[in-house]
Length: 230
Length: 230
DNA sequence: ACCTGAACACCGTTCAAGT
DNA sequence: ACCTGAACACCGTTCAAGT
Image (cartoon, rainbow over all chains, first blue to last red; front, side, top):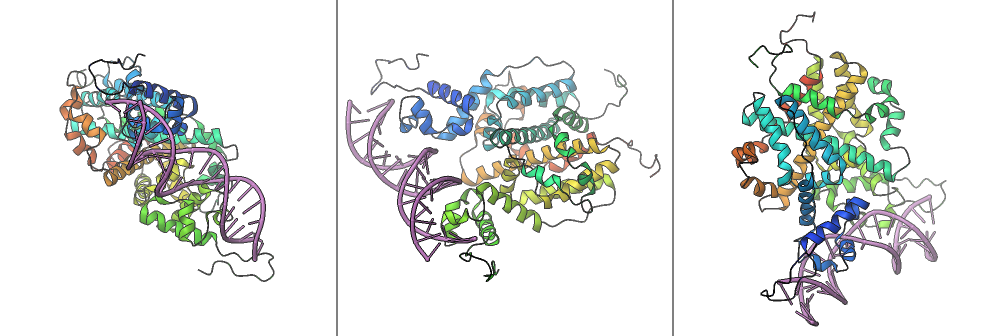
């Protein structure tokens, strides 16, 4: 953790803070108390410094979040993926989702900023590559990746906000109140589902939805395997 | 716009503000300047009142956003939908997306809060109903709806944030900088795509992705039509 | 019942000055 | 070159008081 060696040749005051130290402390705050608690003032206090000292090391708060993203992606485990391209595609997407589900605050950063950090492109590479191996053109493979990313990002955002609500708020959600009394005349299906809606939407259906999406995206080799020279 | 008749029988000071007036003004601010400019202080000033007067009519800012959501959903056009259930499902989902794409700020509210306002459940009803008519059980139909909502919400979130960036920021995005120099050894597919990534991701692929997803979600009647008694 | 004013406990960021 | 202090221009919300 010796962040900045005092390098005798360099002019000016030796630094007390470093990017590495800033990022480490910021990560701790985020892990322990959520991204909402990460403010420049709070971070400075935690570092025994002043808010303005931070601005000497990062341009603004957005850059700080980007550094956090990089840091996270860099230390992320990269699972071994199956050889079969279709299974590899599913595994890469699922790994990406499981990773991001661990720290939902990242999803906000990912969509607030542009998708993924360089280190996270490993997942994207595998999805695109597997899609090409399944018979898509590179252009189609990018399209397939985007659909998968939309689906994944949506699932993460919805789940993250639902979890945040449950954490802070005990009263029944707005949605529950709405579903409690629906007009069966205009909304027969939903009224029939009624209270079961909450229970059904509590299930984790990421995997089945992803399989359906991938089924629709990839060319069909038929349900009978081995007919076209595998 | 006569908001509150002075109703002689009622005790106390007659109201100067009303929910309706508050919502109308809030909507104007959001439409003209974006949801980021909607603050309780700003809204009060616009109404010639004080921040605290608002708290007499809405519990907090979240409730105000919910009222805005209701207002929007209530005035939303409900397109005529095709008779064929598969086409109806696609049309309902697409209408939902097109509606929300008009005012992307709503997506933040939708995910920050729970999905849709009562008036917006019309779309949900049609998606679920069409899925059942296509042969899914009600439970499966809810699962299918959820997948479609994840996909749609993800697309809207990503597009909304990308658009916001373009509006406020002229410098090349972080993503563009990253894609400009990728290591072809570790990320061959992405490096080969390189600068074309930006161009490919600029295309609107919602419809094709949705079709693929729905293809994967619904039972297959085979590509040959009319074989099972239509 | 409805509204006001002052205050609390915060934000991110700029600017001018210190070492 | 690196850091500090004071200040600017904001937030949402509470509390006590006025009419």
